[in-house]
Length: 340
Image (tube, rainbow, N blue to C red; front, top):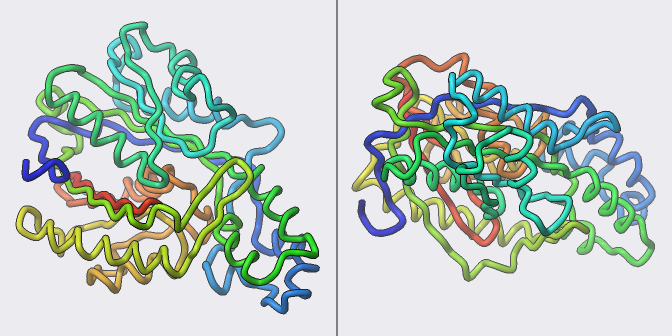
């Protein structure tokens, strides 16, 4: 370990990763049609979401679905795929940004739904879009120390209410172009759930090793993206510039301990075409090894990394090197390497 922001694990493995996507689809065309009066009044392109963000649609929960139930289902599937009995789980970490209430933690409902034992610690970890990677790192540390045998990390996002409230606000006559662009990022958000099970590598030698990674912070940018249940307000240009600076600095710092220049897959947090292209260019990634889901799913917050990994896992071979990468408002960045 080099400092408290760089860590290596020697006996941790990712046993499974699963996702649940909502049945509903909310297209950008539909969103822009609802916003048409505002777009005309502010003289903005009618296809702004596709042209600027590259987001054509995102998923939305239907009236017959519930985000917590979907997250529980993802966790149950992950436990079955890992061959782990719920009674053996020692830790549950929920990493979602969206939530129905402030107390109790979202984790307690999911703990109950997964039928985990009373001895299983459960809590929420909130760190914007980095939550899932942070949750995996925390779980890995507890497994490595011998404190627990198995951990479940979950995330469930419901952006539907934020969408509706943002659209209602942007249709008001007192909203100008600056107001619109400040809330533009809210319109790219999508809904979905994901889960992962981690355990000891020596007990699961054919599983995917969690090798370690780095985290770095640039908290002077803490006010560039501020979100609540009402909406998300962002200085997109400054956030992108600050995030890129932090990623490049973290990447350069990691060179001494890690060789990430030729990974087989880079699973990045899915924000938009602009953000993905900028990160690819800034650190010189091979774009053919950077799969994207933002065009179909939008920005699913912390769930976007595991959801994208789920889509890629059938194409990965034993021994492939995979880097999970994310930038979260604050600004923080985290990178975690897996040996598939």
